[in-house]
Length: 282
Image 1 (spheres, rainbow, N blue to C red):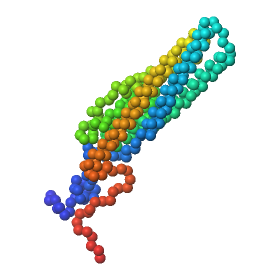
Image 2 (cartoon, one colour):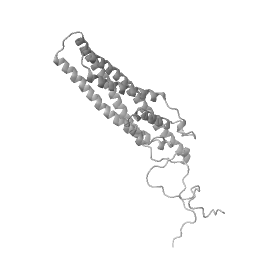
Image 3 (tube, rainbow, N blue to C red):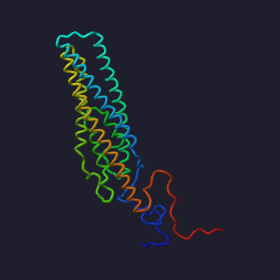
Image 4 (tube, rainbow, N blue to C red):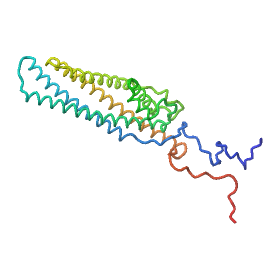
């Protein structure tokens, strides 16, 4: 079949002057959805994680005050009902504030996770194992939530690597993970286990010695929780930094190659020049 240069195939996307032709992007960088910075959400999460660390410190000081009181009781000293009520009220108030802070921080973290994962296709990542919805939903499925959030975070970490998929054809799957993610998730699991033990044992505690044991366990739980929060802040900060940097590099690569950033959602661009002579006006 002979190709007529004046009448190219209408549906051939490889002909530059065809209306449906679009030039390839650098590294096949095709945006399914535009990149939306998660920096504000990351800041929100880091601020509340830091506030949680301060609450842990306050809780530890309060626990030591309770240990001092319980040690006196165990040694035979009698304390007044007012002293006991003040201690119980203080401990209860701190616990309530910690629970509320935990809820707000968890919501913010999940919102950030959704945005960070949704940005991965805009960063050139393909063949992702999870969707943004399941990246969040995995936190709520029993037993699955013991390892799925970790795998989701690893996927976000690797696909956000500025060193892969920008100036070469290496896929994001070849990017290395980080031991930081394992330390963070492991400390998070341990802190939750210790927290559950504190709640369970405090219900059955009856003597001063029982409450002393629970209080010491509470201190250990707070310390591990602080470690998990510090690691979480580091993870959020680094992932946010990696995504912002990779987005900047991809924009620079495409601008250098084609003179314009990659297309975003919105109305289609006007068609290029058509084949053939311009229409004649009557």
